[in-house]
Image (cartoon, rainbow over all chains, first blue to last red):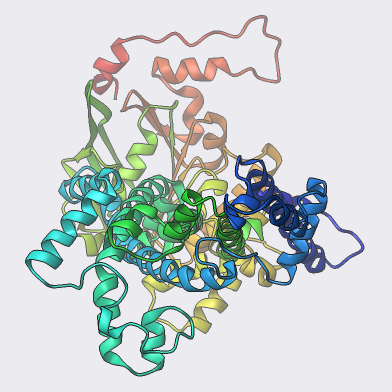
Length: 352
Length: 285
């Protein structure tokens, strides 16, 4: 969606330098996307049959208190005024206060989001560095046993329920073998020792040069990241395989072979560079969807991530938290889309 | 070069195992090629392109190639290992493909693609390869070689793309060029330009050419010798100049289908196929 509108806006601009037109086009589309995102989430949160006043004051409050809070929240005003007010607060970085945690939503997100960021990033990296070579390998050996193995693995990884995989993995690697640490992000006795800088525990531990904590965090992360990574890997491997098969049957591959280029170069220099163009989109989408937080994985591994946060807030009618979380996730989505758009331009000369 | 031909093809068969049975794309083609221009003419499916691919060992997966003899300058192409084949491809025998829109890598610059063809076969510096590439672009009559060097395939026209293709396939100086319908994707006006470039380069370097086409007249005017293929077999072989005296009914049929400028003709004859051509083409050869 945002790609289409940006290219439209960045169309022929005879007088202006084209770079400026492009950048302003991207900015306009970005602003519109954000307005749309906030508008939709805001309206949904307001039409929900939840009384925000009641959620704050409780059902034993007097009518007077109720009225006071009602006016304080500006609920007597029309909804577009409320929306504009919300936008104004948003511009100041104020997402409201969470009822559940009694803290500013922004503070909650600062605590929960890095956990998801950490998990999703490692999972995506696993998916890329194992899934892409797997897919290429399968495509090159199409119809022979390496291909069959990769296809079965990819199918299993894609279709096995993630909570089941997670539980079994916990049972085997944590409970029975004791190779990795259990649920949560850190062992209890390491909790709260290092000062959170980025919120990403491994990074903070490395900055503080506390390698015990670093390894403990890693040991906790490795299982959920692998489980989530399996999912990413399966998807990326499947897509890589089919993109690669498509490119390998193209005419320019025959040209490359006619030139007498070694097969490895035919695959990586010629075919893969064309696959990369398509892969960027797939990887961006995978990463974005993992950044939404995967509630199932986070629940199984007691991982205090954004997915769990939003889900719990929803169960508790904590609309400010839901709204704040959604906007952060949406912003990530838009950001990653833009980034993959940019990379796309870098890799594919045809759309520069 | 002595009298012995560069390329010797004897009784070449290419067959594909398909779910519906074995399909013989080429069945028993033989010819020899020296430093001359040989045209292979035939309709689609007659096996002319498959012959060209089989020579380079680039038959599509699932295809089987058999031959009594498939030799380039003493090298057995049928039993050569992958390394030898890579040396032969590009270095000794090269192929110009049909449509530059699809046969050039869309995300690599033209310069890089031509350079690559050179560097695989010659151990030289990058600067020399670049210089050679620019010279080659000039040789195929590209006016702004510096600009085209940095351009991507989608930024050039079809005719220019095909001249780039010619430059790319000729830069390692192979002995034989296989041109597989090199002008079919181009406008008629551009066709002649590209052919002129090809002709110049061939005679300058004394290479052998296998010109694969469905255009009988084009081949007759461009080549020295003609093979006419039908149903995977060679049904007629003659010097280009003697095409008018062709004897095989298929060739005659094709010739008769073409209207000539002089002399009025009420009705053009339609080519009537005889199933017997498939069976006893050996005899007529």
